[in-house]
Each structure stands twice: as C-alpha cells, then as structure tokens.
Length: 303
View 1: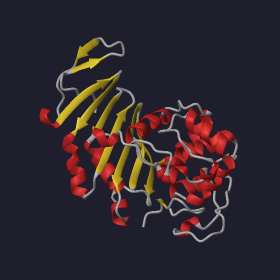
View 2 (view 1 turned 90 degrees about the vertical axis):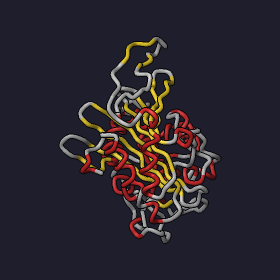
View 3 (view 1 turned 45 degrees about the vertical axis):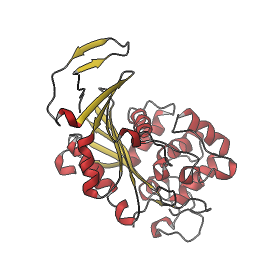
C-alpha cells in the first residue's frame, strides 16, 4: 500500500521540443515570428497543435497507449519552461480540476514556512497520537521526513497552525487551482475532499514558478521545498516529485507531479489517473517515468 492515501472527512485522514503541425511559432504579439523544420517524431495524424498566447500546446494522442498498457485512464501534461511548449495527453482531461490530495503538501510547506507556522523543515510537529493506517505516520516528525512519507496528520497540524484566514490568503496569492479552501472547519482537509481543486495543466504552471523560484514566497523557502522534493539526482539531471491519492473522492485522483532540471532546462509535469485500488496507485510513478523518457526529458534508464 502506498503511503500517500488520503481519507477525507475525518479529523485524522488516511490517507520536446516545439512541435507544431504548421511549423510556425506565434510570438506574444500575435505576429508569426518564423518557421522551423518539421521535427522527427510521431506521424502528423498523431499530433495536433494549438497556440494560446505565447504558449504552444501539442496534443500527443499516440502516448495514450502508455495508459492503455497500464490499464489506467488519465492525463499527462509536460511543460517546457524555456520554449513555453506544453505537451498533453488528453487535453480535455488535463483541464479537469480535482482535489490535489498529497500534492498540496508542496504549497502547504511553502505557506507554513512563509507564515512562520513552522520555523524550518526540521521543526518537529506532532501527529496527534491517534492510530494511523500507515505505521510510519505514527510518530512526530519534521516536514523533511513527513513530505516523502506523505504524513497526513503532520501536515494537518501544519495547516491548523497556519490558520484559516492566512491559508486562504496564501492559496489565493499563489493562484493555486480554484483557490477555494472552504470554511474555518475545513482548514485541515480542504485539499483532500475539496473544495480545493486543481487541474493537471495548473499543476505544471504552478510548478514552473516554483522550479525557477519565482513564486511570491521567500527564495529560501522555495529552496527548502526543492531540497525535500528531490527524489533522484544523476550527473545530467535532477528529478523532483510528489505523489497524491484522494482515496475517498469519486473519481479517485492519483497524482504524480514535479519537475526535471537538466542543465538550464526545466520541464514540469503532472500525471493524473483514476485509482481503483492499491495496485493502480503503484503504477503512477512508473507510468509518469515512462512518459518522461518517451519525451526525452529523462534518460531511458530512469524510466
């Protein structure tokens, strides 16, 4: 069983480059600025492109086979922060908002640090003493350990320390999803069952600012989140990620989101699939890694 299962409704929860079929890029001014050679890749009938403002969106219908092979339904978004190209599997689903579940631990950490609710990621927070569905959660710990373990009660304590009004103000300032945190009695669960919801597209946009340390939060706090979100480091890349699973939401969203740094290149990503059980939950990371390798953001051996 994964450690990021989230059970809402209780005091303690269980948890590419540029590819455009026309071959041209549209500048922010709306003037065609130039055309590029047709890149190698899927056949034209498998790829469709559109331009929104200065961001190009490319649909990759051919990548749906990865979901079919895993027996899952869902969406995947990859955002190239340098070229401002978004690659999407199922654009309609990529725009659908669902509760962020444990992926909200990313902004929750930032908000907790920025408001002074916690001094740093090593300050120990209590889990509350109640029995937990995940044995590792039954101990007090700092965010450095609670983040990778998806310790729900510790992060609920953090949210209560932040308080409803500051939390609402910061979720709004960070422009996170629909920016709705509910009433004061929902301060420790609004990301589990709603009303907070976020789309895969919005996840990548938020993460692109965090990856570049451009959020309206102290740089030191953004660096702290980088530190605890790092899951893999190799000679030519760094992978940052966070999983999430809203177990009692129907449909039940399973997330794996984050970003990859390779030199000066930054790609943010968000996978969301429908989870029907523990076995499906275990497939989130492997599926996302396969897609990242297929899109040449991660090397094949990292898939």
